Length: 125
Image 1 (cartoon, one colour):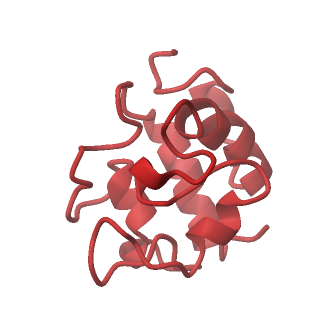
Image 2 (spheres, rainbow, N blue to C red):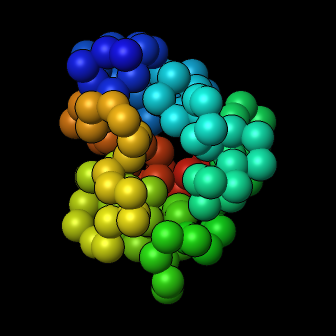
């Protein structure tokens, strides 16, 4: 596990990305969709799978199971997207187990910013 909360692409590399393919390969797959966390049925992880091919459908315009009245990702609206709260990129009601990814260092600011830019761009596929 790297110091930035994952083993995928570097924090420096994240500065030039806001695309789901890069986020999937370098954040979700390497830091979130592991072990009993956000993969498969993800029953113990809020029923949120962040595996390749399903992550976007599980995030965009889907209600959060961690915080009532929040959506996981609201395209173009970072202030109402719970994913950013869960990864420590904005304030709000934290997940009951703490900032994601659990059992790892918090994602570096550059990776959190890449996710924020993806949401600001409308969370495209």
